[in-house]
Amino acid sequence: MTNRNIGQIRIGKSGPIVIGGGNEPQQSLEVQQSQISENNFKEEDLMSKNSTSKDKHKHFKKKIIRSISKTDKFNLLVEDNKESGKSWCEGLVGDWWWGMTEEEARMRLIEIEKAFETNSKKLAITSIVRNEERNGYLKKFLNCCHNLEKIHKDIIYIFIEGDSSDNTFGVLKNWLTPKKNYILKKVDRKHRPFAKDRNPRRTIYFAELRNMLIDLALSIPEVSEILMIDANYGWKGDLISSLRETDTDIAAPLVVNHKHHDGKYLFYDTWAFRKDGRQFSQFYPYVKGLDSESFNLDSVGGGYLIKRRVLEQGVRYKGEKDCEHVGFCTMAKDMGFNIKINPKIYIKKGGHEE
Image 1 (cartoon, rainbow, N blue to C red):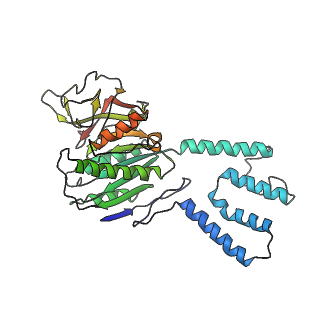
Image 2: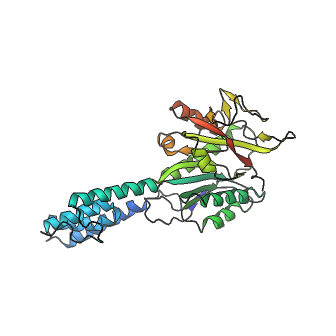
Image 3: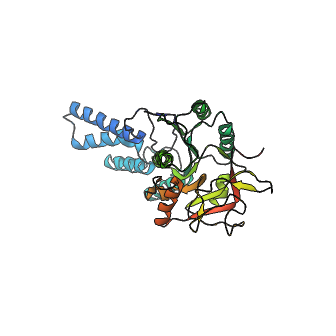
């Protein structure tokens, strides 16, 4: 079995992001940086046995200062200034603190950091992808993602590809390479393509890969929402904002196929979508009570937006007894989370009409 991570992460002010190759456990950049600082400190400690404990502590603080917050840096600087008999503001860069007391300057830094934390929330678009290049679905899917980037500047892509017989992996790699933040993971199991049936081998396999996507997304602290979606769907407009309007823990659109002779779309993922214990119908209106307002469901599939808090509580995919989406949604509902559909929007198998 081949199991390797391929990708690039360019980090500006963002937190630790886990990525790497091979099967060895990877460490975050901050953890690595902290360990380097500790090792450097230990080496210099051995070389400077005549130094006082206080000197060593101050030197160690300076070694690790790059991996801590602005407020912590401020506190260390002020502490050193006071120990040296200097003014508390000695060495502060810029003039932002002029006219402030020490405590006012500290509170200002805390406010700035809180504002940054609020604005640094990111959306992870996650997908398991196989053999979607030759049929043209992948190109349409990636075009839809590109259009979202024009509206949302905080997207991280997390894709798992495996066992494709076409150039799916190559297309993904070429498309992702110029991006700022992404993870592309290859998992080859030498499985033949699964039949479109309800064999538990298929749903267990999909559950495993989707749980890998969850773990990768949760390894990025800034990710606040996860769009779990298959790469054979397309959509019109701003799918993300429309799902956010639903204001729930798990929000889904309609998932449709081609149009029927009556001009209405046929519903696609009838196995996963359920309300009051009953599966959706293929034919419009799909389920009793469908209208223009969002309403609660038992389970959804195809593509849906998940709040981070759902995954942090341990909700995961299960495919042993049912569709893996149903296993996920059942666990979420049992833990008190809400699942809703917004019937005003849809994603379409094979991409939307041009």
